[in-house]
Length: 283
Ligand code: PAF
Image 1: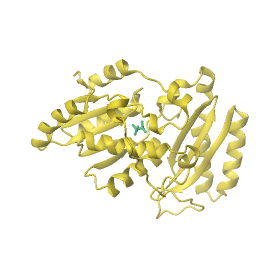
Image 2: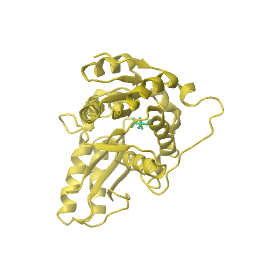
Image 3: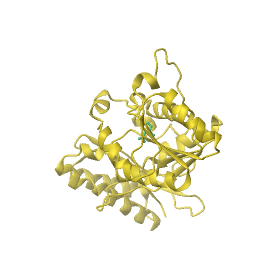
């Protein structure tokens, strides 16, 4: 099915009004395009639990703390629309910058606490940009359900907190990370990796699994992490922004396994100019 591409909020609202009146569940999958199987798994989840599905594509300038990164971000709208044809998507919402942030736009949504760590410190302003655009997308689409990947777990928790705090009546679903056959977490940024870097990239996930295994076996997380960073850098990785074990709920640091408190290992590392992030459950 070919879904209509909607570029204006007025048109989107005209469409969703009828769905709401009919009491239909509306699922939204917010994306920045360059769709891969990870995104498509979110569309599938939305399709399975909602009568209506909206995929949004908007490369949100407010969440890029680096202008080069924004410029280089892949934009593949035609391809994206083609990939969505095999799903029952009712609308692809592709607003432009002026539709999303008209002249005089002055509001920022900021979530404290969860954004004080990891990407919140390494990418200043990033989560304010995310929370602002996602709050707008939730309100614009009138969605009852939203679907996000666990690949960006910190983002998922920030979005959940934001929706709860602002009383936006929406259920936020976290869906499992989809990986390439060699373990690399799917990400639109993988398109930016050179052939050589693409071969090295899965080492990050390998090292992460090794750390979790050692941690659960009683080894010291700081030592495990230091050894992993050395090995990654010997294989061509650059700066490692963080490798942390943190609790799922408040993202506080965890120093010893606690079966009563779910935790994840989070990592962000640079490889040939591309910043890779990943996280896996500690279990
Ligand atoms: O995860 C993303 O692609 C973006 O951060 C999101 C949620 C679409 C907001 O721009």
